[in-house]
Image 1 (cartoon, rainbow, N blue to C red):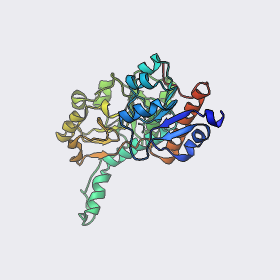
Image 2 (tube, rainbow, N blue to C red):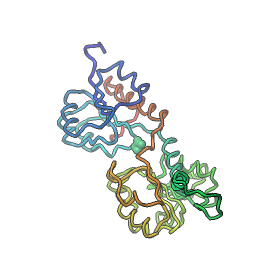
Image 3 (cartoon, rainbow, N blue to C red):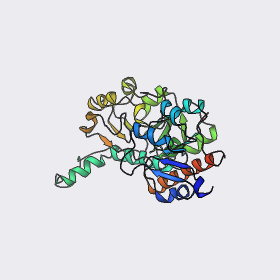
Image 4 (cartoon, rainbow, N blue to C red):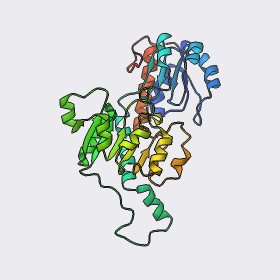
Length: 323
Ligand code: DGY
């Protein structure tokens, strides 16, 4: 590519520098902002002036935008791509790519961080100490739930679900899983997994961790009925997508003691959080930090950049999501 012929790439947010170097080298890059995502109007206007888009999971890439701007590639800086109208992109011949694989460990780790925090009441304990309420060791103070010997239920057992299961072995938990497709025997054995129907998993699990992608099928898959089917001592962990859970039903289940607690990294209307969740002590909240380590975010940038460069060079991207 000669300097004057450099393709113009719109990047909607500032990303780790090390991961972006190759894009700056080969393209004319506009980074929209470090502070906020573009509004739909800003995205429309800007995308018209660029050849390719590198966007994040909070940018809504819908049919009207794709039809109007016709980018050569939409490279999503996330493994999930429910923010993009894949059917429209495919119809228009626009490749859409994601960043799978590199955020598996980081996301499994945050699921475990939330799991440990809510079962051992770490946030409540931290506030207790800071508020000067701790007057001395006490046999009944802030009792939590032990994990060894308990049952973990994993719903959605792709890469991240498996990474969560792997860690459960070290905690001496029994792990059930529910997945659209049963895994092969060797994988089940390696990860210590037992396949279960959804009803059995809901009834038996002490902790339920969600790892399915968001789609019209998984919308509100966890709802009033499923909460009723869970143990009253069960904890729910969600690091998948907010809308796989009916948040209002979750608040009700937590309030009425239908379940014991929840650890949440994702929400239905991010960055808004159901006000009911903010007042409950048995919930640990994080602002969508699943992939938020410097290592992972850098690798995500490298893959997202590679995908853009490959398509612009007429090569196959490394992780295409169009069917
Ligand atoms: C993803 O990549 O889909 C994650 O939700 C990012 O944290």
